View (tube, rainbow, N blue to C red):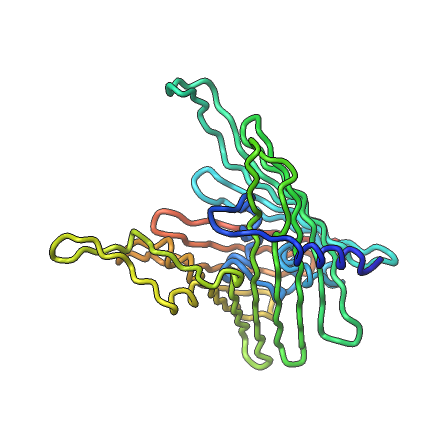
Length: 339
């Protein structure tokens, strides 16, 4: 029973195929869902201390230290878009620690108009997912394996689409040396129902993270390589086009270095063992794709802080996309076992 759920999910993860980019649906599944994660660049898979939201991205990070932790996250995203998450981990006899989370996105209200542009009321759009996860530590080793199953619902006016997705994660932790590494295959699955018969792939991706905590220095650093299933991830950004003296357009030159760095996310956490933490991260792909020519305005930069008390903790993050847009994250985690 302990490994049945993991075995089924592993099998489906390697059996199913999916694509990324504009071909995928349910893209909200790859949004950062906690302030800690967002502050460090958006995608961390090696585990963050007592972060109840982390197993939603790498299920192998689930362990007994998260039992009876309840977390709520709210994100003021872009324009009128906002999203939130709630997560909990509980212990069940003969099974161990089990994880459950709900995530939702509210895209706001839109004007309803006919083909002639005549307005006739408003409508809304939203998406959500129920996530259930389980992890298992391989006996007498530092290796952990885990899997999530996600039940997905998307609603646009009177139309709905549903789907199911699986995550499979590996985690290695050596607490003596302060190192950890995690490998994840995320969002492999399929649509169960579509809006109007057009079936799309899910936003599948393979990501790898490494982190190092220095035993005699007050910081911890993180490195993540995202979307490893697509080596050539960079594309020409028309905002970076230039013109020659004759007025001809010169496109941005994409090199192998551009492809490599656009997989890269780096993060740094100060005072990881203390009750107050400072965090910063940089997402190279976001910085390259969302910046304007000669006007970066910190695109791809993230930062935040956390305060940890006995019974609860609060974390905040800000993610900068370009000079016109950024997002605020606030996460609160309650340690119910302390009451």
